[in-house]
Length: 76
Image (cartoon, rainbow, N blue to C red; front, top):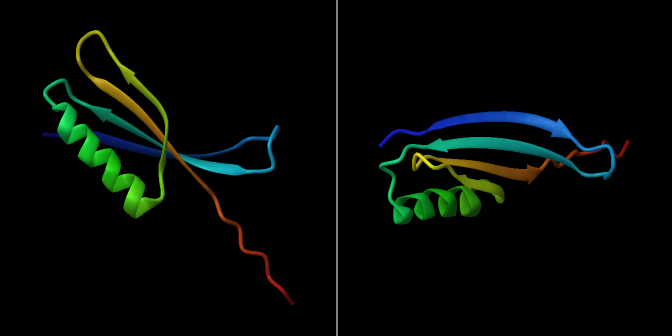
């Protein structure tokens, strides 16, 4: 089972929060349980949340995960 991962950083100017996005492309032979386990691992260990999931007519899944970018400001 192979899937590809693309990570990008985008800021939203309408909100004060910046998000980092990760795009996953799951092949058609990925079972629903395997996809669920993969997304659960990303959520629990990487603090990602599901932004969008699209099931294409050919059976592939396109998943967009996001997480907040935490900026640490110096206190000097």
